[in-house]
Amino acid sequence: MKVLIPTPLRSYTRQRQVEAEGVTVGALLADLDRQYPGIRFRMVDEHDRMRRHMRLFVNGEQVFDLTRPLKATDDIAIVQALSGG
Amino acid sequence: MMKAKKKPTKRSPSKPGVAVLVATRKGAWIYRSDAARRAWKTSGPHFLGHIINHMVLDPRDGRTLLAAAKTGHLGPTVFRSTDLGKSWKEAAKPPAFAKSPEGMRDRSVDHTFWLTPAHANEPNVWYAGTSPQGLFRSEDGGVTWAPFSSFHDDPIFREWFGSEQDGTPDGPKLHSILIDPRDANHLYFAMSGGGVHETRDKGKTWTPLVKGLEVVEGFDASNIAFHDPHCVRMTSDPDRLWQQNHCGIYRLDRPSTEWVRVGKAMPKKVGDVGLPMTVHPRDPDTAWVFPMDGGGVWPRTSPDGIAGAFVTRNAGKSWKRLSSGMPEGQVWWTVKRQAMAADKGDPVGIYYGTTSGEVWASRNEGEKWGVLARHLPEIYAVETAEIG
Image 1 (cartoon, each protein chain N blue to C red):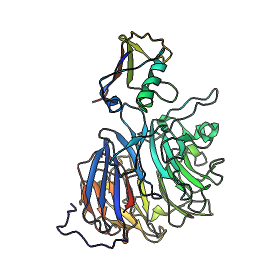
Image 2: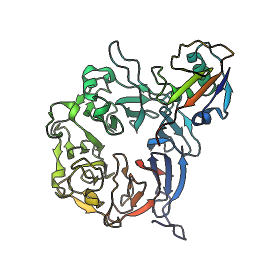
Image 3: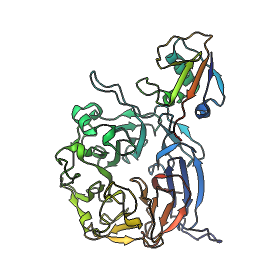
């Protein structure tokens, strides 16, 4: 499935959009980390909690649960919730 | 401003050059010079926009450079270079806490704060201190990291860690990881807050080392949680430690376990509150501090707007102001706990980085100062390294 990558993480992917697979959000992030080592830990902490300013959308729906099932046709957007001045 | 001379300075090929490693709130910079330390070459920014809390070159191999990084939004990591920053590679497994036992709150590393190469007989081993307080060890030159020792989930240590509210404005930190050059099993670390701790069995057991240290008025000094060491340094005599604490400047001469407050000898108008401390590479009686205003609401600025480093050359019996070349007043920055360092030159070079983004340098042990760099972001750490 297609995954939109925010600019702070493009030092890993070098692309705005990448292809990745997974039957759950957690599996998708694992596949991203396999392709782009280190990227997962920048988004998710050691206890599988999405970091404070990271947001992940599946078909426009915000998702925090890494066990959320995914379909191959889902559209994924990783977004950095910029805050502050 | 320190300027380049037209003719290169002659130097003995046996004398190594110096690198000053500057970590800031928005990236890292490296300044290199020969042994004369008159002309400097700049490299950077490295990791522009990243918060770099510490950058350290391994003195054992002279080539492994680690940088502790995160951004305001992305999680923490460690970058590694073996060509003095020309290229970097990210750690495969940065410091991260293990899952806690049932009923205990899981903790997550917010940032790696402190990096220390381990004992000379343990090549490629490094230690890292984190925020919140954690101690990690790498055995492959910083590529992979694992929690070190069991105190992370010790209920008593959990009490001493306190909450996020008990730490520094930037979170509670484990710092000042010191290794006894005579014994790789003998280590110290300090926590803000949470006191100074020592192990003699390579981390199996830890003992608090806070006797003689004062705490903020109204708190109980017998409670380790209330102890706030800002920076602890080991001298060329590993039995002598120096400490800049929230409540003064201290010296400890082992095997004694009682710190002595030597900061009382500082001028009363300046006081002995500060964040950084650095020591002479060969003389354990000599140490430098950079006091700050810890009165009232703790402005954390130069006392009365007057900047100045202070040195003791007699183990803390007396202190001398060293501010020649610094601005004469209206100075409202300060120097963070990792942002003051000494090189190994003779005379020793002293360097400090300010919260307003200036690096100041002295080639003569602080007698005369000049600006090495300005207009940088807020400086978090300054380290030195010998380079070929």
